[in-house]
Amino acid sequence: QISLLVGFISVNNSPWTHYSAYSFFQIVTMCDLVMILFFYIIHIFRIYRKLTCVSWPLAEFLHYLIGTILLLIASIVAASKSYNLTGLVAGATFGFLATILCVLSIWSSYKVSCVTQSTSK
Image 1 (spheres, rainbow, N blue to C red):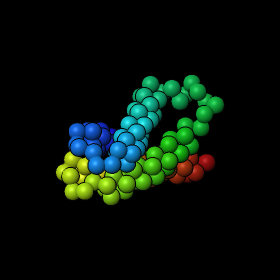
Image 2 (spheres, one colour):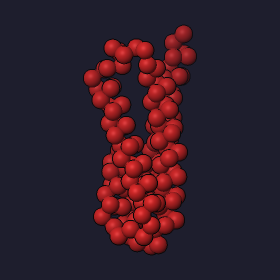
Image 3 (spheres, rainbow, N blue to C red):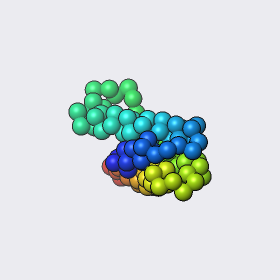
């Protein structure tokens, strides 16, 4: 997700007013981005077919759920500590946008994995 990367860059290039709030924001955005890329690689190379011991829809659902909750918390903290500095406000805004996109990803992965499996039985 590009919004995670833009939020990370915005916060990284701004003067920080509260170190722990923005370091938490950066850690959450980078971890989410790495995990999203991990699941994209799993799907692109169809690794899920070889590793059948893992429930990939459940793993993806839990990743998006936990990542979305952490991203929402990090965005709220970043927005509350921004003190009207443009880069920090932009980073928090892109964090909220990424949260909305993650919620949409949760919904779409639920529809694809659960609804299509229940109708195919």
